[in-house]
Length: 460
Ligand code: SAH
Ligand code: SF4
Ligand code: F3S
Image (cartoon, rainbow, N blue to C red):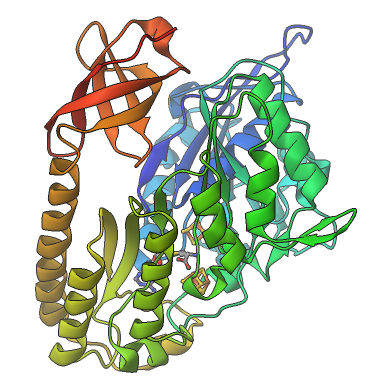
């Protein structure tokens, strides 16, 4: 789930009536929550006269929205800052900000290690970014990694009424109380907080008015959602059912879910709500009960397999996706075989797999590691199995009719790319006006990372 995402697609702010236009470059690392946060930060800075640019060279401010999940992800921050040094020397007025989970974890240490940084802002403090940017313009360095009592989303501008991409993220929940023994997220994002129902519905309606047809609800533990409403507290199932009543919103997804929070009502929503898409990311991490216990996952492999059965009973065509860690401290060959067995039993359509990375401050970091060559070998074997399952899932779509929401032009002229209900990218011959529309497509071929097909229903 982590990788570099260059932010290009966000429209700038309402700057026409301002004399001075300043340029902001944002680089986003890590998960979808960071993508969402970058978008909201761009909007907040837009209200201050900043427009987005897609090169650091042109920028007045560079913001690195960082990820701390594995060592490699964190270290990218320091290599990128090193690369910015000549630019800062050539343009001393350039301001550099560090946001996201490394900002939260390392705080002032970042300023000490990298004096070229002007501001460090943690994920719960983004509403304070405009004030921090002003301080930076006045030559003052600031660090804000508080977990304030107020909801940052209440202090960020309303989403602007310009048209935008047909798919959007919407954060409904943040933080994690699970404390898996390997994971930094509970420390970098704080404890679980759900946004009130009316705020979520309002933001969803605003997105749909801007042309959004598909919303992915985000949370570090999105299915632990428990949002305050006028008539009590709503779970994610009820929220999904209510969102589905918004006219013009065609598709709903949510990520990331924890197996212990898949409430019966949410599973039932998959059977009853056609707008809820048949793709579910449900990480399990390992198939060995011994390792699951050491990871403090608080569920067994059997619990997960039975849960998958119940989900598939509700929605037989559900495509499942997962996250796996190999080489967790103490993992034996037998534990690893149990993970392979679980993968064979579930049959994933898609999965992300990682070599365990010891993270400072987490309980597992104290334990002796599995030798690197053993972990490398297991990762290769795991990925071979997951790759074969992914290929088979794609191949199984050939000849079938799926619904595709067109998002953008494809590589070839006259081609558009969209996502199927099952989240597969699909290339189709279609005009640019198809963007934002859903059509029935018969899948004709499966490539390495995408499908190709022909439209079989009239586009409009
Ligand atoms: N909230 C999400 C996961 C967030 S992190 C959830 O519970 O599923 C995304 C994935 O990164 C995790 O599912 C896990 O597979 C992986 N991950 C987290 N910490 C890790 C670590 N220390 N080393 C390797 N992979 C890790
Ligand atoms: Fe991390 Fe576990 Fe929380 Fe997911 S559930 S964010 S893996 S601590
Ligand atoms: Fe990374 Fe923070 Fe997301 S550590 S995965 S950016 S919650």
